[in-house]
Image (cartoon, rainbow, N blue to C red; front, side, top):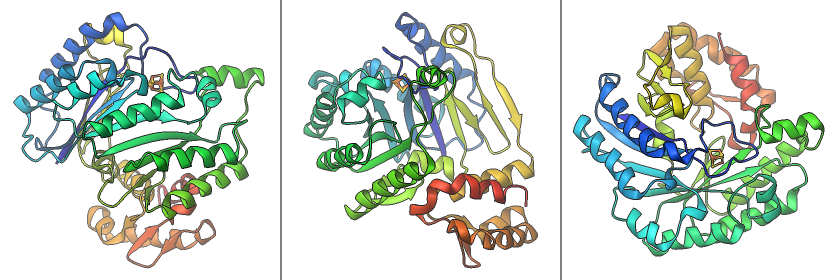
Length: 369
Ligand code: SF4
């Protein structure tokens, strides 16, 4: 089954760390929505598998759209694709868009899973990140969603922020656990040059935290959440039993996906393409950048996506796709990486979740074997 992604690029305020495709000119919203519907019509031949398993509204800020507009995308998708087997429809929301009126409108849609962008429960950290909500608003948003009957909620948090140490992280995690939610994504802060943090770093006003601290914080998150019953199933993701993100899992499993909107990526097994345009150009027509994936690209992609998951690389599956010789070479190389905690038992290659922060180094070593 394929996955559908809708990128709603609008943001009322730009967060200090953000290098996602986004647009702060909300006047472009109506024209962008219509351009996205046109793109859906024009791109209906991209996916080979037209049965859709998951739908995801990301951003930007999907909750800047009225819920009826989100539902209109789902209804339009149902005209083009087979949605009879959809397992999960998720929308990202910003806490300060969520009030009881919005939530009750959201409940009339087919969206059953909500991703709340919280990032921190420390108001000073939220200010530094230029988030537009407070910790209290984040808690109230989750509560309103739960009161309305949402029982599949995920929250995002960011760690590795200079000036906010272990105690702050532990308090954050206590708040997260107290929410009674089903899924947590925890991302390490990356300071990108094009962001406000990037400019601050160039002036020496903020610094990336050192490796030792990154690993310690990663471990605190791993220990705290797994001790509370969450499964650490992907490098940045934790879920209670039965609540893994099906949409993101489909990316990691290499299934086809179609992204609609400025900045959204698509993949159909043979090629990948994305639309790099800014929102104002996108409304005038979508132009794609595309790349064809040869077998070497697909092998490397499988190594990369599989090692981010606790299941790791299934060697029999890898041999079937790319040949026994490659699978054997991969296993031989993996054995040399025991120092990184890599486990290879002849059936699979995996990185234990508590060591996954170093997965990039391992993945690079296993590229192009
Ligand atoms: S992090 Fe999200 S809300 Fe903040 S600017 Fe980026 S896309 Fe917008």
